[in-house]
Length: 144
Image (cartoon, rainbow, N blue to C red):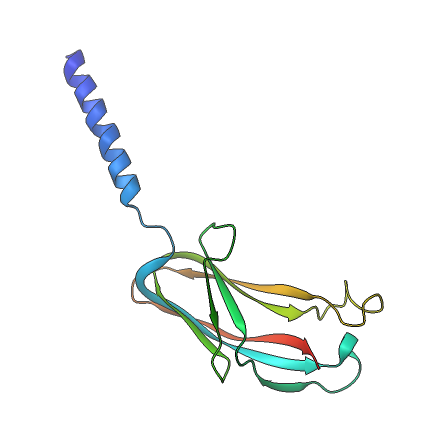
């Protein structure tokens, strides 16, 4: 009886390890995607009262973090219209981010003539296969 119980426990433990190791984490290798658009507003230094010039955020870096990774997992550049797409993703949680001039001015003027850039982060979840998530239009602020 003890020998049978020991074998059952060993088989259960082995199967648990195998099943857990087959569980797919967020990342590449799937058939879902996250797409969006980056819009750029060129402002005067320190966000002075000049009217910003608005246009597509062409050739800007967009980053993605898979799941709970610490640093970015992939980086792409927007196209000439500011569009981007991360393809071949599996189900899971993702963070996409880009850099923008700090429009809150909490760390910028009057101490800095040009506010520093900060990361603008958007969290996205892919819940099923063959899903395309639209991260919509996001805005970045740049100094003229």
